[in-house]
Amino acid sequence: MERSSDCEGQGTGTIRSTFDGADRRMTDARLPQRLYHYTTLANLSLILRERKIRCRRLDRVDDLTEGHPADCPSLAKYIFVSCWSEDSEESIPLWHMYSAGMRGVRISLPSDFVMEHEYHSEPAKGFYVEAETRFVIPQEDIHGLDYFFWLMPGQYPLYRIDYTDDAAKLFPSIVDQTKEGVVLAMGDVGIFKRLEWQFQQEWRFKVMALPAAAPSGSYADPNYQRQMNPLPRIMNRQLISIDHCDLDIKPSAFLDMRITLGPRFHPGDRYLLESYLDRDDLHAVRLEESTLSGTIR
Image (cartoon, one colour):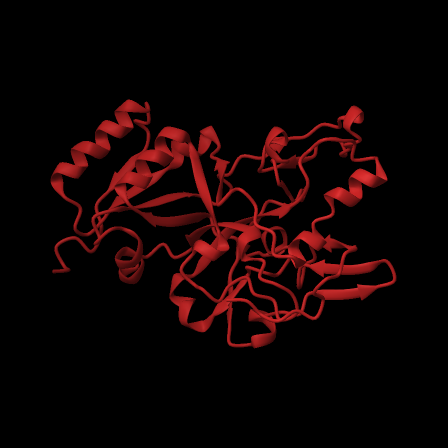
């Protein structure tokens, strides 16, 4: 889904990650104690083995209308999300949609389970950060062959989804013409969804990977800065070479992981799941039966 752009061909400018009403994770008193994720047994096996969660590109998730501002090309291919629910009650729609015929699992973790990695300045590269800067993407992974992750120090990138029928929020105008050029305010893209999705009660982890030149110079070099500017690449709809990114789970979070077995979970799959826990030395993980078991045909 592409929308016409009022800023096609703009070659200069910057990206700004501003948020409507400030960072929802850091200021919202409703931050849930736990989050819930419905998935297949196969995906759970990968989570347990790799100790990571996967963020998918926004254009690969179920709502096809997300990530399309009103005044510039789609940003969905630059935004990566992992979707969770705050609802502690089991959801029949979520079981149906994400757990392979209700034979999967629901994972429950504390809401602060994603690891934040320390950053340090690299003067030889012209890369400077404040002391104790931390972010969910490791520093060595922040710049890829044709992209870089937008660094948001001090912000744990977990956001509550707001459900609305307001087109101005679903398809926001994010282009700001300034004396210095064009500025894109990308912060609220991927935060609003249509009212039809309200049953999900979603919170999501969200990071942005923007198109850029390959890392080959110093960030202090103005010419290199111009090469690294993602805005003209975004306007030209440049693709990037990744379709997902993975976030590390804190080791301590596994001590508080709970796994609910799907309402139609097969007895043989339980032996398989227990073998995964044995394989990865995760005996502290708690297995729970679904409250819906035996009630759904």
